[in-house]
Each structure stands twice: as structure tokens, then as C-alpha cells.
Image (cartoon, rainbow, N blue to C red; front, side):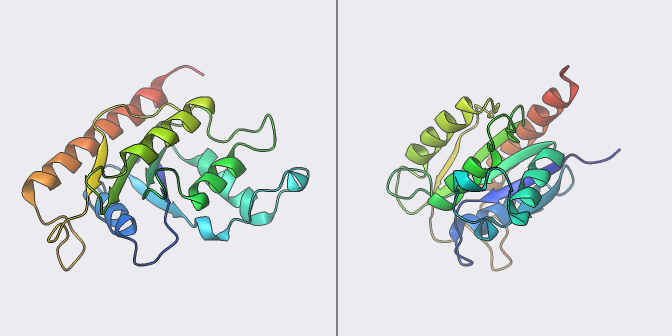
Length: 187
């Protein structure tokens, strides 16, 4: 049986991002369930409606990756209580040009890690509002809005704490069922 293809979007462009570390850990935990392919958001130009008629090659490739995916996993920090600009830019490109929304119907899950005690909850709420407008079914629970703490990751990048690993495995199990439910839904 072929594993579902998951498009992974990391909202931070930083190579040292704690959310990139979380995304890597989630991809590792889910490797038996998913074929995860990350899209590099840094390759996308800033959205400009003037380019809708002749999409840049990086945008066409990005849209094709989203369309080919069975689901989308977004792992993102929070910037100023909202969605990072690189992620919002990717969402805008994926929804354009008008009538060619690559996001429509893609089962999606959101996770995030932040240094503050709220985790990424405010940014995730904004992201849920945006995705709802684009007809994206977002996994409602469990919410993964984690606060970074010392010892969360092992030296190899895995999740060190057994309870956190169990929680994240449960999240991936729910996401797997979410993706399967939409794969079986009539078009």
C-alpha cells in the first residue's frame, strides 16, 4: 500500500528554527505513515498579482506539489501574534490566480513551537481563519501549540520526552485518519 504524500510547509525560513526541528521530528515520527516532501518557501517570490497570467516556475512547481499531495502539514512559528510572512506568501500563491486554488479540499494539520507560554495559538487561529476561507479542511484536534523547553529534543533531533512523543504520535494518527477520510470522500 502506498503511503499518502504529505506536503510539508515550515513557516520559518531560518535553518536553525525550532519549528524546522519540530517538523523534522514529526516527519521522522510519521515516516511509517507518510511520504513527506518539504516545499522551500524561500524560493517563492513575493506575491504580485501582475504575475498571475504567467506564473514564475518556482510558483508553478509549488502549486503542483500542493496539488499532488494527499495532505498538507504546516509547522510554523508565530510572528507578532500572527502568521509569518513567508507562510502567508505561500498560501497566497497557492490560491492564485483566481479560480486556481491549489489548497481547496486538501486535508491539513497545523503544529507549532514557540518560546512563549501560549505556544503558537494566536498564529494558528489566524491560519485557521485563512485556510477556512480557502476551503481547506483543517484537523481540529489535537492542537499542537507547544512551548519550547530545554530538553525537548535529543541530540539527534528526536523528541526526548516520552509523553510529548506519545502526544505527537496521537496527533499524527489523527492526521492520518483525516487524510484518509478526505481521500475516500467523493469529489
